[in-house]
Length: 247
Length: 231
Image 1: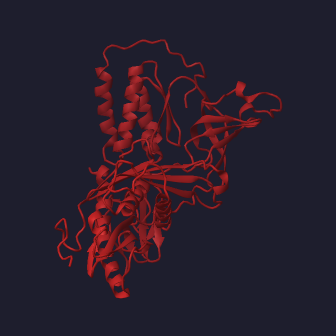
Image 2 (image 1 turned 90 degrees about the vertical axis):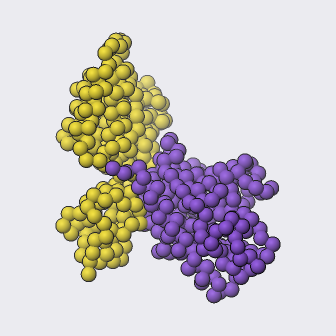
Image 3 (image 1 turned 120 degrees about the horizontal axis):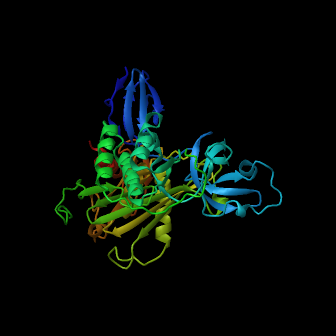
């Protein structure tokens, strides 16, 4: 006899038994432990027929091939850079994946030095957390002015929204340029610092309230009320020296 | 005969428990666990690069615990600033108590650091530390097969007690102190230590008491973890 012990859309804690018996299949962060299905993370239960899916609400970023990530140069080696992208080990960006040629003689720090922030693509993943990056591709570049904030990686799909709807709404309303890395690092650059602050505030709000239904409407109202209040637009001549392409 | 407890509790009653997650905003996960006058704060850092490198495990992340009583925290001459032999032992048993539930296979070669600080101590610190650490790990979103809840049980004379405080731990009738940690308040024992003596049949009964107490603590932990997600 199989039976479900939780309801749909319930939030559960690690170790909580979701179902007993062999009649159900675990998915996401649910796990089969002998004849029970248990939760492995804090998450939202989604019951779909015989499938019990647990959507995690908290967690770490697990690198996946072809993901766009935002990272920071931590070290410059002879033929590569070491990049911190918030994972459990530094990623490697080899010079040939940046310069598009084999580099034998140059000092790589003339291109990018320690502390520079980049947007790159994951090009190879070995053993779950050994990562190779590439910067060959449209929009992959060193990021100039702006600021980087960190959000919880499981919330990234909610910040981007369906086909980028949420992020383009924030971009349109605040006039900021925003790049969201799958690793949860978000680069925000606005010509007006007030708008930059509103964009960050909005992203934080999405992060905190993503599990509550009706998110898009709430964010729309929030943006309207905030952007409307900025009466005096501070004009500061801020220039992003790097490319104009947005990602 | 010790038949009435100093603070008026029943023999199998816990001190008042409360818990909270997210107390250290800069950490990946953090939690506070308070039982009576004992307060523990745990913060999780990582998974991150591991130094020194030779400690790295090829198949999973290393779990590294650090237990520390703050110099202003406690009673008696036991609390001195800095690490001691006792701190290192408790750090080790905390790590051993948490390892069975944690699945760190996604981060081979890296480290997950847990820092446990005791702000105020009145016995039962290793148990409070383990409870806080388990919650902090869940808050950080690590894969865990269960939450670990811990409590101490013991004997004064022939009386069986749950959750001894500092006065009871140093009772003149002689005492036995048994810290127990259990998975999800019932499933298995991950920590079992003993100071003093007890008979096998007493031990069985004490473990039953510990199981009941752990499931109560588990409820407190669960409630605290879900608190931020109320609609």
